[in-house]
Length: 94
Image (cartoon, rainbow, N blue to C red; front, side, top):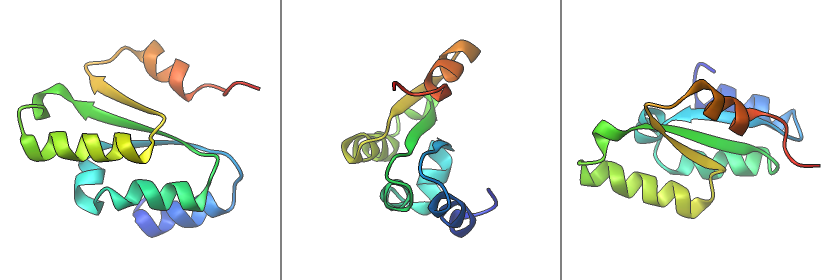
């Protein structure tokens, strides 16, 4: 999606979605973006991609702690394997 408004508008149209978001976007829009996604689409699965190189940065670690507390589906640390992403983004349990 091009921006936060476009993402939220599209999510409101669906009942269930898997949202892939980079930790950099969370840094730009703030951790509130995760809460807004969860409100726009209550049954969404949010997968956040992070880079291990950011871990020494205490501000970045705090962002990760906050989004985990909000309740993201998964936080994937790079480098990651393709199968890891596919298994997380695949269909949920019925």
